[in-house]
Amino acid sequence: MADSYPALRNRLAGLGVIAPARGNRPWTERDMGPAFEIRRNVRSVREVFGRERPHPSDAGALFLDTETTGLAGGTGTTPFLIGLATVDGNAVTVEQYFLRRLSGEAEMLEALRDRLIEAETLVTFNGRRFDWPILEARFIMSRMPLDPPADHADLISTARRLWYRPLGTYRLTVIERHALGIDRVEDVDSAEIPGMYVEYLRTGDAGPLEPVFAHNRQDVLCLLHLRRRVRRWIEGGEDPPPPVDWEGLGVLRLKADYEAGALGALRRALTVEDDPAVRWRVATRIARVLRRSARWDELLALWESEVGGRGTWRVRALIETAKVYQHRLRQPKQALGALEEASGLLEWLLLAGDSLAPMLDEQLRARMARVCKIWRSKRILTR
Image 1 (cartoon, rainbow, N blue to C red):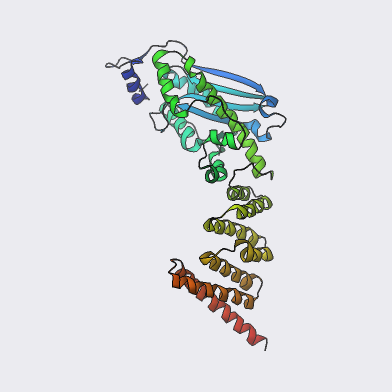
Image 2: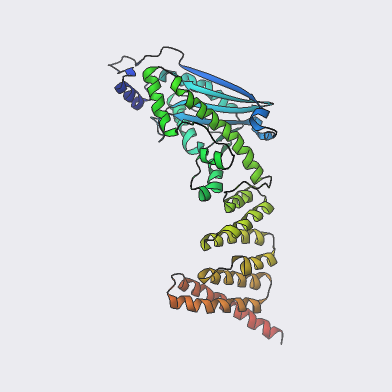
């Protein structure tokens, strides 16, 4: 079979781990033990989850995390440790597929392939952009093409919504500490792992890799905990511990069709956000929900009091207030009053040279012309 990892082999040859290829001679590796091995660790559900029970859908899920020879991805990157976690009845099983020799990759992938095919749901963290593309490439290069999972739950998108703004990152270890209350002790840095594997191939000593096994095992178990908590926060209505992005939680609840919980999270975001642009974005999300359910009084209260603000934000809020009066409550006089207040504010903003003022002035004039036309028609009809 053609060499499927020339870049890594050339690097290892330069380090003296393997002999360089000469003509048609195969590569020679120093370690003549088993090409790959599977480590299994079985724990009780109570030991992993405590008094809580796993979600029923966890029974058909496969939780996956990989350790690779490089962090940038690409066809030259080889997964040398693949961690899997499954929940079966009262047991949580962690399996770790370890590539002891590079020549054992095809054999390891063949053993892994059945597990991936059997899974109803694949659960990863950044798996769509990292773990799965790398595995897919290795399967293709080993002439074992594999269809992508029908259901791939990548938790990184949820993590980005919930924690990127308050924490400045959505790294799994940071989320684990702040959201799950788990603080790893003496954890190995992910950036060091590729070099540690290369050193193992050079020396044949797997002892220094034990922290890597522990790191990978903790990663897949963290996926179980994170998925369970996220379901409770998004679908069950529980509020996550701070710090959390309440707007992000509201968006996730909207996607889960949990409208009441979404409104609660979005309204809470209005109470904690100071940035006018963010407050406006949150308010428009709330407004869309209220419009869908025809809750016009609440929508009016949103624009009149909850958004408030100054300058252009206040003008925009007054225009939205006028829309509610005009289209939903059929009260053109009140709509005209809101627009007149906005016009007074806008005159000052135009004089001050506000960059958004000309655009808002155009919108305001068009809106006022329509409302005045309706108001005149209504007065003629009532004479």
